[in-house]
Amino acid sequence: MKIGGKPYRSIWREADGSRWGLVKVIDQRWLPHELRIEALRDRATFATAIRDMWVRGAPLIGATAAYGMAVQMAEDPSDASLDETWELLHATRPTAINLRWALDDLRDRLRPLPEAERAAAAYARADAICEEDVEINRRIGEHGLRLIREIAARKPPGEPVRILTHCNAGWPATVDWGTATAPIYQAVEAGIPVHVFVDETRPRNQGAQLTAWELNSHGIPHDLIVDNAGGHLMQHGLVDIVIVGTDRTTANGDVCNKIGTYLKALAARANNVPFYVALPSPTIDWTVRDGLKEIPIEERPAAEVTHVQGRDAEGRIVTVQISPDGTGARNPAFDVTPAHLVTGLITERGICAASAEALAAMFPERAGAS
Ligand code: MRU
Image 1 (cartoon, rainbow, N blue to C red):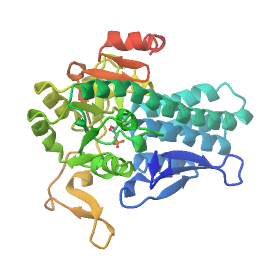
Image 2: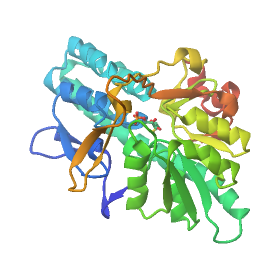
Image 3: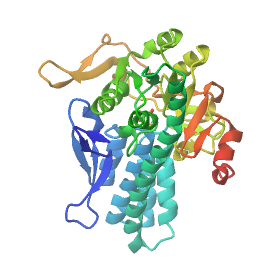
Image 4: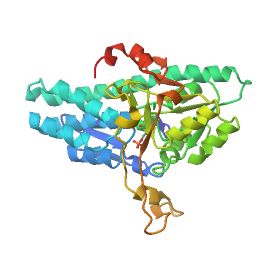
């Protein structure tokens, strides 16, 4: 998508005269205030970038891990290095399944190869994972557009379709397009008026800092709302559809996503608002059936709850404490929305029910494998 009219992806390889070039990312910790680009040169920096959320969002975490493996294979293509890098990167964040998916994919492909061929194969596969992610999201956009078009057709001409989204499942969370935002971008391209309600998404404020920023950059009408406002808006008939992303969806359709998603799903069900999840297939964990019991939920530092980051009047990025000294905090970063609260899953192959049967019918080649 675009920043200041210039096309960008969230991660890319840039020629620098060396054999493989440099892997670069947008350091998302400073958005929307500053656009900082970082080069990731070794596996330790890749691990830091994922753990400390320079990059974040399930698909982008997977793509970053793939490049991390490639960079390390150029350094040391041995079996020991392959396994150590898998462990190092896998330990960075526990919930988004795309991380394990990408690392397993790379390791399975590289292991049978002679060491001399591993770096080239790893870079090629990391590049391919990025291109596949872009295409998956473009297709999710096409299928989600159908939903938005149907809602628009029931409204008086010119009245916007009002979409509520949570966290950032936009293009910075993927390689491009975003998952939940792809249908929104495509609706705008198709001339359908939309209005997006953006949950601020405490504690890291990915809605306020990233989703609002990208919608703003693309001129898409939106309002930032506090996390507690969504239920009220739904009660008053002000939301036509909820579309969120996911960090891991189980084989039976339980959806793990950013903390607070579950409350939105409850409010949506209570108010007959359709609740859809944009789901790229690498985010399906076919090995898990009970999302509540089996998905590890990341606990992040208490300081993310007790402090907030913003920009002061002089334009400096500052972190301020909002709670008393001595108050502790719990910070579960994700929650699980049970499948029965999900109206449908928007995948790259089409829209299906959040159920084991529907997911298996959509991805028959994966459903049997675990
Ligand atoms: O903690 P984050 O910012 O990595 O969490 C991101 C989310 O929860 C997104 O909604 C999810 O990864 C879907 S991204 C397409």
